[in-house]
Length: 507
Image (cartoon, rainbow, N blue to C red; front, side, top):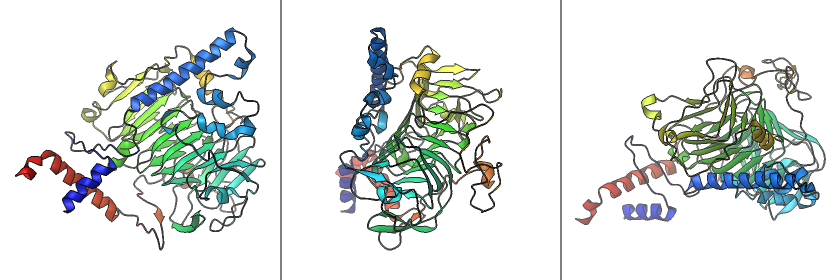
């Protein structure tokens, strides 16, 4: 009876098991797009249409062309002079795997008027924390420029948009932003920087629930077991661990038009090499500028399908794109500018894997611009022109990359000034020391290179941290593998037996 119920459960969830020669599981998960190449193809058609429209209007001297960049996201809403009266149109402008993220579309406008974060257990109405925990869809905007210094992680509930357009909004402090087991989140036009570990405290995540959270890693934005996520036009730097990390089965993610700088481990996609549920991870990384003083992980991928398209990689210290556990990397129309170091010219890095294994991984480069000796090592089907269905924009000139990424980051934010770095008011000081108040404000700021690791001296967070959140009372989960995870593994094994030895059941 248990066997019949198990098979029925798997059939209802749409999970299909495939076993390869390496005896690793490749799961088709409920929220995974069945044809990721078609999503990449659609993105490229959208870019081509925007670029063509800009060119045609420019040649006809139509005044509308002055606001067009060829960037399909920006051209979707920025040409409307009354965009502030129709903010929610932004939700219709998404691209790639996160294009279905609706955020708070259809919900009320919530205006943040209070920049404080004094009580994460009972947030004050008018604060950002009070806004993001509500049950109903909300489109969250800001009444004025704000520096929001979080006490603990900001836990976001389903169907929320944080829209910083029209204000200069900085989020710093403990946490910072945590997207945990939710869907339909849009974060737009926000500075996220100087995030540090915090936790071992009670934090409210909904109007009706307060949970005990363990110590966070200090990521800028942490995406955990979530889907339909879109991060657009954000500027991220100077965090303790990752600038953006997506783990534990998260999928349907687009990271676009953002500016990354002054950091070591920029972006992690995938929990660890044993967490097969991340095989359903699908992420679009488009029109971003990976700027000054970056070292590695732009991104670092495990499993999944990662579409890296039309980004500008200024330089790196170790590598740009890394991976393990057989991720598919589809790199199209990017500009990779290698550093001066002759030993760091390679864009790609396969981590903790023998060459005899990674030669089968599908990594390809199409239409990329390789500068200053940069080189991309393809593998698997990526060595063949038949790999994938997506057709690249094939940018033959640097001008197209400049055009598509010209507004990366927060609109109107200052860019890197060679030799000075990015200086945030209130975050000055030499690298690697703490302020006199012990709150780290004086310990890491502008005028530094890669300054997340030296602050704490331990090289960053622990990728093997399975689950930091600990509920007390209802919804308790421990930091070890739960009984449900073990049951899931047992179900997989049973289905494998049924699939390969089905004749035994007919006897």
